[in-house]
Length: 97
Image (cartoon, rainbow, N blue to C red; front, side, top):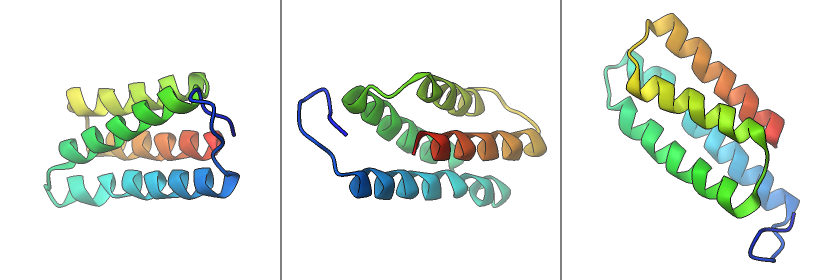
């Protein structure tokens, strides 16, 4: 995969990074259940996703993914909706992979 900076990222490295980010998304569910600071976790993932999209210029799935995470962060929702949305973000990230 060629980046906007004109260097190639090996497919295995890209896949490993997406897997790592997927794990970061999975953490959101138990963090909210345990009343931990899940908002900071979302911020961390958003920063990485926005940076990754800037480097790779991927596609509209990133916009949907980032929008869902931002929505979770700023709009308090029932835990079941929160959990469903986290699963949706994980699915989107896997589709990007």
